[in-house]
Image (cartoon, rainbow, N blue to C red; front, side):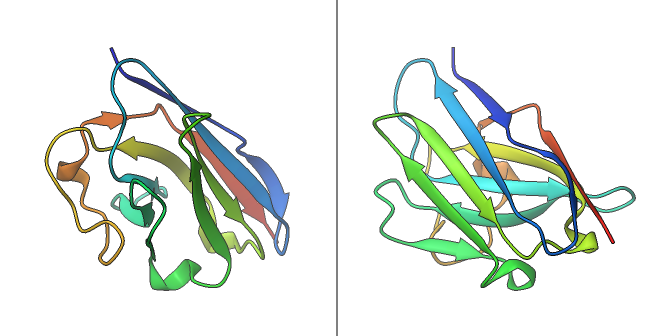
Amino acid sequence: RVRLVESGGGSVRSGGSLRLSCVVSGDGSPGCMSWFRQAPGKEREGVAAITPSSSATYYTDSVKGRFTISRDNVKRTLYLEMNSLKVEDTAMYYCAALYRGTSSCGRVVPVEADYQYWGQGTQVTVSS
């Protein structure tokens, strides 16, 4: 059984920083991994994605230059470093892992349907 557990969320003032982590357990190794987020009243959106060997990354336009996705395959952990946080970044953030199939995760927005395993989410709240 594969499990993804996020941590690192919390409340922060605008301009602040947070680092989210997602620890993977279970059999096998994930391919693409991504961060999604869902704000109240909004659809879930792909925020960032990273290829298996960290050879390429993708970021949605609204977070480019502020967020950094990374992974440590030895530690089996995915990270999202979030800097210069804005109120509009407030959302539940979810870690997702692909184990079957393929995805152009380093070039295009991650697609929910491509990912088989999801964490339960960690809340990020940014106040002005």
